Image (cartoon, rainbow, N blue to C red; front, top):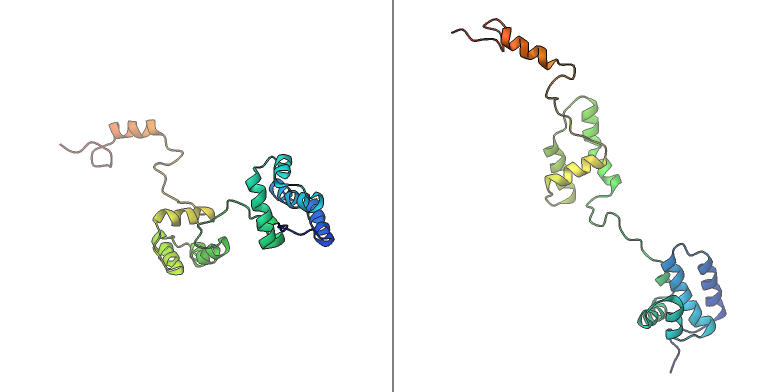
Length: 174
């Protein structure tokens, strides 16, 4: 039976060097898996025992190494903005004209941002997408406050009871 991966001194030296530079445990273990096969000639069952893996996983790693080479050790990190329509830099460019309008004292209309966004990506999006975009870039919704922070509610109530007729909050003539 032909060996799946052939041992040569250059490949072993590259893998040994790469093992020293491994950044995470999964990458380290994958390199170990191949290196144990090349240096010691260990069986898949023995390697699986050492690494705490299933034998099938070791077979898969060896098979992928034979097909793809050292590229199997370059693992992609998980997470991130996998469903983004625009990169954060593109979003900032999209918002740049609106920032300039805001600096001049104009009100930001979310509908305008939404139209620009939809035109840029070529498909409709939900309103919440635009609000999340604005939040990511430090925008916040400014609304009128319901009452003045220094207002005296008791004094206002007393005024309403004693105000002369014809004034706002006063008794109506009758």
